[in-house]
Length: 184
Image 1 (tube, rainbow, N blue to C red):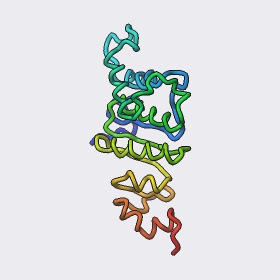
Image 2: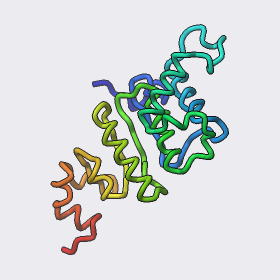
Image 3: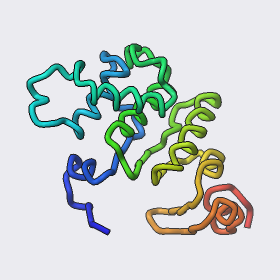
């Protein structure tokens, strides 16, 4: 009910909006836990926390560990982020968004550069997260979108071409012509 269009990013995050980008955006030299704890710290820092070690802030560490577990990385908290596979790095980014306690996840091309096995893992993760979060997904892998989406809006050159359930969009003649390669 509130227009957040002109709010700066940090204010949007405090309103419950988290975003991951098409290109992976992590601190590669830090551990997975440190990456996620930093995200939590950006939103959940408390007065006086500036004067204590972030690594000892139990509330932030707990929040980070919970986010890592939800993203399927519970056993990888000590791994250096840059050594994780591409798919695991994408999971790490999702864990970072979860650490900010979002209501809405904005995910830009979450499958970009992934193999089939990693893509299946991300599909299952997003399906699980959709139970507790609204997810706005920008993705070109239509098979993936049809598997994870409950509702779709199809755009062509910035204009809405079709909206509806995955089944309705899949059978829409205009969508088939524009994206799925169907003949007229």
